[in-house]
Image (cartoon, rainbow, N blue to C red):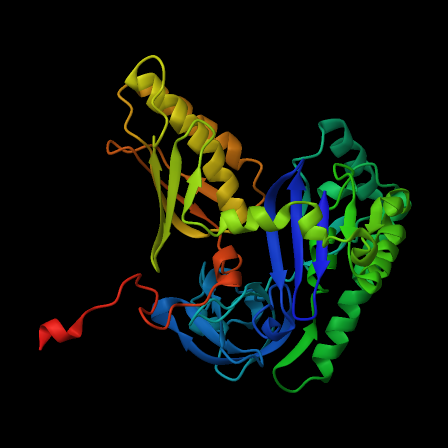
Length: 418
């Protein structure tokens, strides 16, 4: 189930599995300058840093964005210094205008990240202009992948790459063709706009948060979408009707005035968000997690807490760690924790138990659409992992840095140092 609650200053989208909140998104109009992920710009190269293999690009936002060498697209005939892999200073020059897309929002003092491999997401397919990319979602059954591959052989544009999304399951050839035609028209508009521009210019803006999440997530697996704003309800219902008319009746309107409760109160979302903002998370058996954020990484400590077990210490610790593995995977999605993450599982003596906990954790992470990488449990019982950083996280959406301690969690008594 997907719930969308609209307020004057922000919009919230909650994803529920049963009654359990698994993902949460917040969008504020005041944050639009920083919420630029997916936007396409004509940018001007400001300076090229060979030692960093990167270039800073002015895209008309408060902070310059960064383009790394691996994300640069170029025609080899245009490169003076030939070689198997031309250096970035041979491909890009200061004041050069380039077409680019934001792949990561600005975070803190860092500007956004760019790529020159533009992708245009539709409902059923993602089109990658001037590319040979060809792929079909691995989440689809093999027989459905074969059916879609047969259709693509007939309708795929030769000069562009295509990735078929999970939402394309059971989509007809006409629906796929219509989606691709719309993206082709959009790409032509972007190219024409870039030709007319003479400086940093926004060429394409991603749609509103609700429409974007629905485009990325909504499929036949969802029971429905509930929205408490009539204008957004009409927009989303029309959007679904255009691509999946059979799902249009799954979009419902929540009238707060007649219901007496707000949508998030009715669906018990508010109380789950409150718990997700705590540093401690309780496990079903009585154990707990403690989640601490630092600028460099996030640390998660697993404790037995009130879980005293019934058989042996090893068995108690093993079962506690299994519970923790499931809950940590859920908390990473819910809190949108990215970057480097270190998990301190409780020490287990039996190697097979360590292996099973790690497998359980990886299996729980497989339901997370955000890319993760997990390493083996170390001799100290630590698991190091990374999760792609997309946003600034749930806590940042609801909290500000404490002005008294500047986020350190304590204040120093300077009078003792006099």
